[in-house]
Image 1 (cartoon, helix red, strand yellow):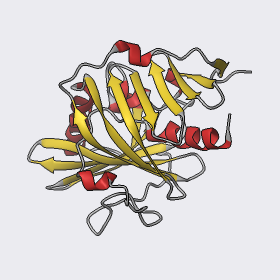
Image 2 (cartoon, helix red, strand yellow; image 1 turned 90 degrees about the horizontal axis):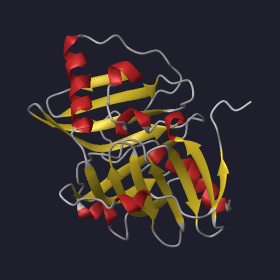
Image 3 (cartoon, helix red, strand yellow; image 1 turned 90 degrees about the vertical axis):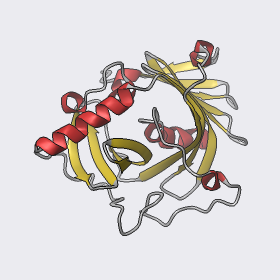
Image 4 (tube, rainbow, N blue to C red; image 1 turned 120 degrees about the vertical axis):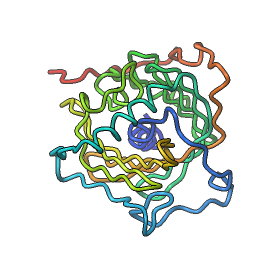
Length: 249
């Protein structure tokens, strides 16, 4: 795989997580002169935003009744999503930005197409996750269940069952939740930022912390939930495949 492909694969593995059901951001976030965020800050981070993800503590917090209700609201939010398409802007740990388009068909299917000059496509056919490099005509493939994507794009999203809740803050207009997959095959964690309006929540952005402590943030725009996504979008390309199996000995 090319150097660009390897870098993008590392970033995308974190970035694509939980993209279903995201709130549209202002179009200015995708302007050609968009500037990288300050190091260590997510989009919108400020005095009212807790953007740091603690990757050193693997223990889950003990949830009270109000927090349990909040987690179940996140479950319901993602479980309500079917087909979704839109645009995304991703900023990696080195503050480099990439734009593109994405398509989702829950459960488990998604396609991320990166804009020029990248020729990388990330897709899931519901069983495997493929990083397709059209420069090299080569693809790396992983079992989907060994990736973090199962948490929020699966058929039955149940965070109390499948994730450790590391942090949870609920205010009048903002909720943040930090999650780590309970599966031993999955690494890193994600912090989700929801805007609140009464009982309604709307996911604005997320920050991924990888196994090495590097952060990736993602914002989305121009979402369309009323247009069915063609199942053909999730078919793997006829490229040379290098398959990886979790816990292969």
